[in-house]
Length: 62
Image 1: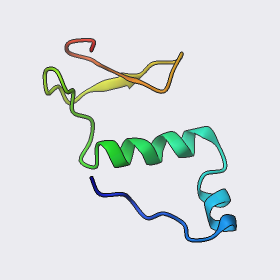
Image 2: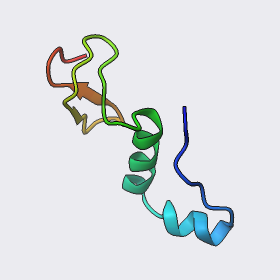
Image 3: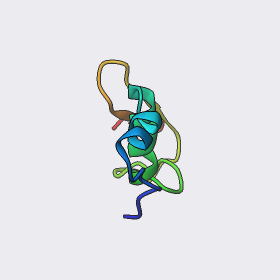
């Protein structure tokens, strides 16, 4: 799994990951570099669950 660029300094890290949405976006890009793919049905559309940092497949709700 390829990782997008990581900052190499503390100030760079803090600037890049200064809030939770920035961290979630980075982790999503690491997990699905070409966009979301459901592990169960291979669906390509999903939405984030508001209670946790998880994505729910629009097709099968996994």
